[in-house]
Amino acid sequence: MQGNPAALLWSCAANCLLFRADVQPPTVHVGGEGENVALDKDDFWHDVYAQALLVDIDADPAVLDALDSQLAARLRTPAPAGGGAAEVYAEEGVLLRRARRILTGSGADTDLHTRRILLAAMARAAVLRTFGGGMPTTALDDALREAIDAAPDS
Image (cartoon, rainbow, N blue to C red; front, top):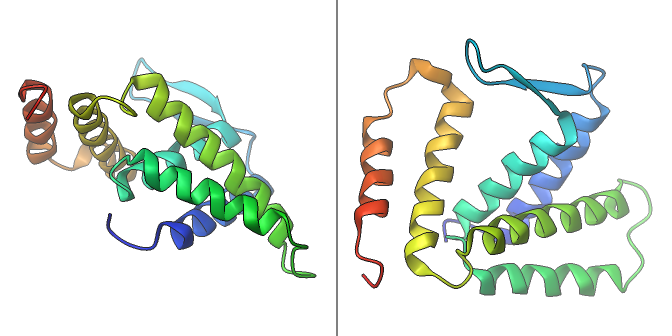
């Protein structure tokens, strides 16, 4: 784990709300030449930030459980007036559910080998989203290859 997961979750949720409020088109275009795909803006940012959270917490299901519990406790008390806390709390729930679906859907919640592959793939995807094809990804490619090739029980 690299930082404070609860603070990262709050920040990611707030950013999703900012992107939702942006007056730009409701879609995000991803992919390269010949593969350009339009994705719903909310879905795109939810995936980006759910993956960022998973990478930060090393895709640890116990940390997701703790974040779920912390959010449930905050939701039991009235949100502070003003500042949009209730909206951020709701968005945190969306991100936690998305992160859980990524984790369980891949099988990485119960299989350490799969978890290593998922983490390497998400780290590589984050760099490509940020820098596009203009940045060498050799080290990230190697890390992904090593995660795939590693013995399942190592």
